[in-house]
Image (cartoon, rainbow over the protein chains, first blue to last red):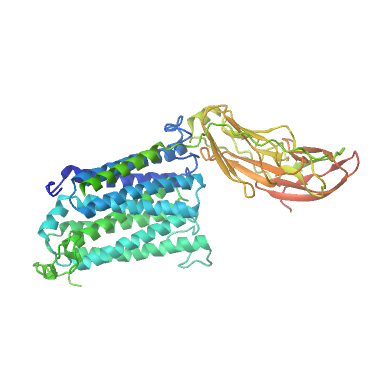
Length: 334
Length: 255
């Protein structure tokens, strides 16, 4: 294995395609919940006792649920294929383990999807299904990044950009906050609290709800979470603008985060104001997943460019702390 | 190390294959309900309760969009409406009326199966009643697939698929429950309500609002009338030997 090629173009492209497919899969799952189609196929793992239930394509509810299953099956097979590919061609043990972990995640995810159908959509299982979907996305995005030519080159050359530690910390916090915000959103969605606060951007005409029950509390927390995530993304954006030369990609990721969060908040408002219309309700979930993926990419890329000084890289290479200040542009000091 | 990785890859592949090919529930298989237990000596009665359900509030059923399934659109070329506020002028159909309390003893379970059908992408009947332990045959008469999702709160919930026309299965409820809602998650407009009671003294109001409960033993009872959106009303009724008591309900809001 030590003679394996330095950069596997085909492997990397396949990992990128898989990550994109996972976003598509999450969107398809969001369509299922947005249309209330989760129980329109009552059995699992088959659909009406078949892999091809009659007229499934023409019936919108069954199309949503069975289509989600077919996409999930395809993604699961792609994940196994990627794991096999990585297992055979990848010399880095931690990358291989990451690929195997992705397989375990997608299989567990399938099981959770089946259980939530068989037990009539219990909120804890449905929320777990939503949460694991995002974790699985993070795994595939990570695999796509660490198999890229850029990552491998950075691994060998160990560049360290000024400002990357500060950006790394902000991006890491953003990723964590976005994930927590998605979890809150999942609890809200699966407990039917999406319209617990019926107006937007105000809350019952003010800034605070006049009373609290579970639905209102979760919904309000999700709105507050949006504010916190926005602040974190603004900080990440500012720090990405201060990154040293050679950090154009990170600056673009910072801009992408800002644009995505603006779109996401608009979609959240649209969900409320349209009474949970299918389109904004579905795209809101898809944009949330894309936002998380972008935050993870920003975190990993800034880490790779010297974001974690004094810490060992996965392959055991020690990044010298002084490299972070060796670049000409040092405006990013925190 | 190479051998270890090879076996790990094989295990992963086999695991996924197992999940993909695992056997599923036989959605088409009819299930046989347990036969009703032999009933104790029936408490025969010769009386009855009759009445008329009125509702003159002026609101009406609304049109249903069946765009989710082209087959349903085809089956309802002239359109379809909800079955909530049905009935002739000022009369209310689909009200479940039953003796809620006052009965003593036990009553034989009807040997006749109740039928809940899916016709034209609607449940038929929309409201019905059965006894605890009575067989309910649930049938799909439509040339499209349905799922039958029962949402009881006392009995066990179930959700079964009927992908083909003329499929049917049987079910019995173990406990009394007024009402058990059925819905089709494939066609969200489809719903039905079934009252499950221990005795045979129930009826559902017809289009003219009338109902009749026969064979009631003499006694004083609490009769309840249930409607899916208008709630419930109760009335004390005394039934004499071979006499028919009147118990009419008006669901129009007071004032």
